[in-house]
Image 1: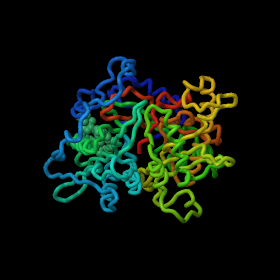
Image 2: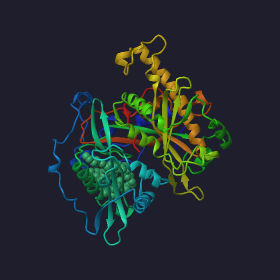
Image 3: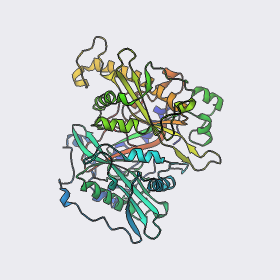
Image 4: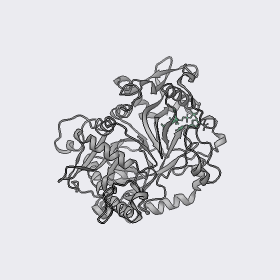
Length: 502
Ligand code: MYA
């Protein structure tokens, strides 16, 4: 997870070191734990409806028909009984709203979930986060969530929870097609039960339960390469607490640099700078929802946020306990997992921009005093600066370069880039004031337009390229590769991936 000062050089190095087609083919992972299996060696994944190879030219991929891989089925054709488990284990549906069960999942994940390659940090999702991310407010039946998509495995004798996988319902658009999809997350097998092929059973069981609800596609991410990625993004990090990050080995102190100088270079202003920048409120939901949908329509894959209720859920329901907003509590409420801000035009009161992050701490495993790395992760954002005509530009409301012309499109992109530098700079201020040690972001959405540009706006160092990558996958959806922004920040171009997974 450590980062370096020159992101562009770093990416060039990473991309030179591996053949990009091999990454897309699922043969090589960069940055993360490498997975040297060829597709044929994936005993489980070679049997699943995922694209099995990208062999042949990428032009062939571009020309192919995108859609389901499996023949269309009906719910009646889905197996009715749960899959058999090895003896001594039993299935257990988890009600994440139940405090005891939520605590069990929290403990399993805290001790056994994703670690970095050097086993220095392990994700530590909070109970509030698990609850927030389990409810989707997009449902085929009643609003809420499908408790039967939160699946645990227990030891029969003791009842101990030893494995977990979960899904929530989201609507995903890939290019011109939108479909309901399960977003699969929190796959975890207790360390003592690893390499026993429990994972394929968990995945088949969640697939069965998702299918029983008439949903046939899924979206998921992993730090490893499996058959077959649709696109890969790289992690960037903005150090907000240099002494701690250096001390715990998250970042290194460049030679000929002192901590005092690093602190000065990475200093963040104490207050946001954009006029009208404020925390998002319930009254903003309709405007934010409309802006977000319009902004995300520009990407090749995204979550569609069909209803305002979903927008309210994802950006407001995780804001923690209300009240007590004095001092530092002004920036962080008890139990807060998501921070969402808007820019309200002081004259027209129109919401012109929104930006958000979520809190995902990691346990620090090998340090004598520091226990928790407080990390903020950039979430969704949107800005109307890409839609407003530049002076002299057409008044027509246009969404794409095809309809606005190349020069006008370039001007709008430049304006968007400049705006995103300011917006993300202000978000950095919020994250710092809320006590976060680091703000993390991937190279998806339009992030490449601002990740390396902070210096100009707030006189401090930009984000640095990390050594972690996140690989995106679709289940039962044939699809040409989508740009995850790996070409780097120097081109200042947005990516094709516009979905942010938790
Ligand atoms: S990503 C987070 C994953 N979790 C962690 O990394 C936590 C720490 N690690 C663990 O708990 C274990 O190491 C896990 C593997 C559970 C990851 N995604 O049981 P095994 C394949 C998919 O012996 P273990 C997230 O949550 C592996 O290639 N497959 O392995 C999204 C091999 O298959 P094959 C994976 O090490 C999850 C098989 O499992 C992953 O004991 C999305 C070996 O099984 C992985 N991250 O346990 C899941 N890791 O032989 C897919 C290993 O073929 C959802 N494997 O290579 C698909 C859509 C389902 C719904 C469809 C609805 C329509």
